[in-house]
Structure formats: structure tokens, C-alpha cells
Amino acid sequence: KNEVEQSPQNLTAQEGEFITINCSYSVGISALHWLQQHPGGGIVSLFMLSSGKKKHGRLIATINIQEKHSSLHITASHPRDSAVYICAVRKSGNTPLVFGKGTRLSVIA
Amino acid sequence: DGGITQSPKYLFRKEGQNVTLSCEQNLNHDAMYWYRQDPGQGLRLIYYSQIVNDFQKGDIAEGYSVSREKKESFPLTVTSAQKNPTAFYLCASMTGGGETQYFGPGTRLLVL
Image (cartoon, rainbow over all chains, first blue to last red; front, side, top):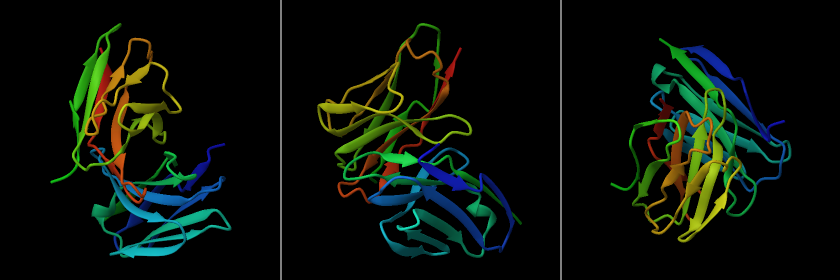
């Protein structure tokens, strides 16, 4: 079983919809990252969380350490949000990130 | 502008050939990473380096080698021992506090 599981694997939404992507992990962590991979392959970092909630524009990320669960929300979705969203965890200190398989989001106009 | 560059964008390997993928960063980051991405799979760690002249194997290091002679550079060699090298290869670096991981644009390796 993977240490980081994401759901759903694929998601199609209409423009304007509220979107939620989930990430569950089975190990103790020091931080959780959300990343976005564009169709061309480039990856950008969206958030790093160790507790609570962070917001940037239309993106909101939350984490529940006790339940080992994080969610990424996109409000007022737009076709340009179409991408693969990746959850990754850092177990401790300087250890490398462990990645989920990603959620492929398509937003249709 | 600071960032990570990878070259080439596409690389073709013949049977029995070693090829080297370049990764350069001007972000002054100590930690650098190489990942492999296959369709439907998450990123898998090949090698990483947390300081110059030191590196560690990741989960799928067999058939690969790296060097870290300079802080800015972390080249990856795909050797002939890697029997299934076709994949998308991503290089990354991390800020000192681990807040943000920066990725290069990737190199797509294909076998002829």
C-alpha cells in the first residue's frame, strides 16, 4: 500500500464548480506539500502545511494531523486550473518527499 | 531569474549506451533531487544530495549514477544497466527549511 493516497484519481468539473481533492497518508510527517503539474510536465509548489489551513487566491489547503488527511479546495474553478495535483509528505527533518500518484483535474468551460 | 534548468528537453538512447541528463540551479540550494515519472505513477526518487560531494540512493537507484561536484550542478547518468529507461525525468531542489521544492522543466528520455 502506498504511504500517500490521493482521491479521486481523475476529476472532471464544470467551470465555476467548487472542487475538493483529498490526500491521506499512513506515516508520521513533519510537513505536507501540494503541487501542481501542468500538461507540459512542469511542476510548481502550491502549499506546504504542517497544521491548520492556508489560502492563496482561489486555492485553499487544509490538514488534519490526527486523522492523517489533507484536502485541496479550488473555488470558482476555471479551465486554466486543469492540471495534475500532487500531494507529497516529508516524514521528518531533511528526508525527501514521498509523493502520491496525483489527481488529474479537467475543468470544462 | 533564479531557477532550475534541465537539458536536453528530449533525449534518445541507443541500446547499450550511457546518457547524461543535466541539471543546474542558481537558487543557492544545498539539497537537490532526481525523480522519475512514469504514466499513472507518482514521482519516484532516484538519487538525492543534501550537500556538495555527498549523495544518497533513493528508491530506484539501480542503473543510475550521479555526481555533486558543485553546488549548482547535479547531473544524472542513465547507464546501460537500466533496462527500462523510457520515462520523464525531473530534477528538483529544496529551500533550506524545506518549505518549497522547485522543479526543473524535465527531460523526456526515449529508447531507440
